[in-house]
Length: 165
Image (cartoon, rainbow, N blue to C red; front, side, top):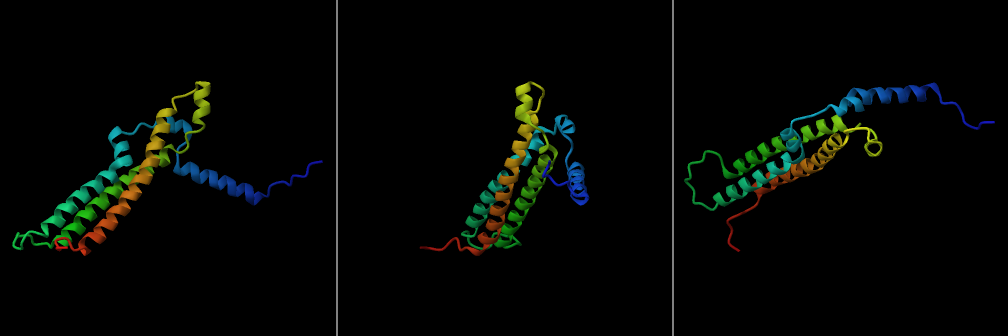
């Protein structure tokens, strides 16, 4: 005698709906194995935000040091405004890199049992697995870089730079 209760129709319908919505977002493992994005796009998705932050940081330091120069430099925008514009441009680049990382992750997160396939000698899944790894790195790094860029863009104009101690 079995003590299991049959699943309700609504539970089965909900599970079928969840599977179909995942299938709409991400391709099947068979489609994923033929996925081959350009290498530069993959690396932009993995580290674009970090390079954007590096550019914002260096430009922000240079802009901060320009505050120490006597007035009359001929700039129509204040140096604080320049720092905000530079941070805004860096944030746009970091958001683009984050979007690429999300796109790569959604294209590769259903790669199946990679370790099992490799033990059996059945497939070429490691390149897709590497793409997924770089996409996850990009999700983490680009989000953190974006937050640093935003904090730098908000904080840098508020600090005093050329003040004697």
